[in-house]
Amino acid sequence: MYNTFSYTNHTVLPEALERWTVTLMGKLLPRHLELIYHVNHIYLEKLRKLYPGQNEKFARMSLVEEGQVKSIRMAYLSIICSHTVNGVA
Image (cartoon, rainbow, N blue to C red; front, side, top):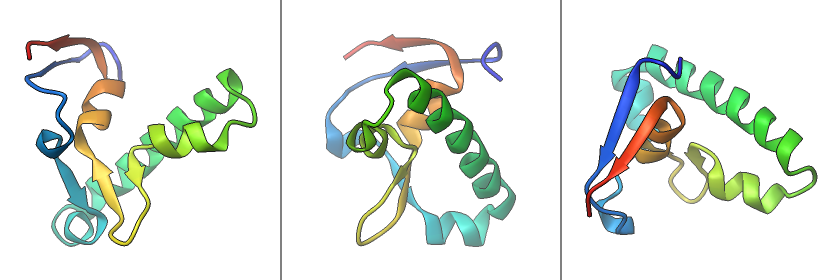
């Protein structure tokens, strides 16, 4: 999973980081959404071992942003599934 992709991010401004709503993704790409939830589960389990009991950190770092509109943090997905990340802001 980690040896295939590289990610280049052109800005870290929050408004530029894409978020897709779970509703939209579920309608258009239901299998992809299922896989994202699986990747997120594996990722959060690793975080729980590194940072036991820090639930607020897990919420901030999760691929799924909880809120009024549940969304997938696309940049986070790109970062955790990549073997290298390059920032060129």
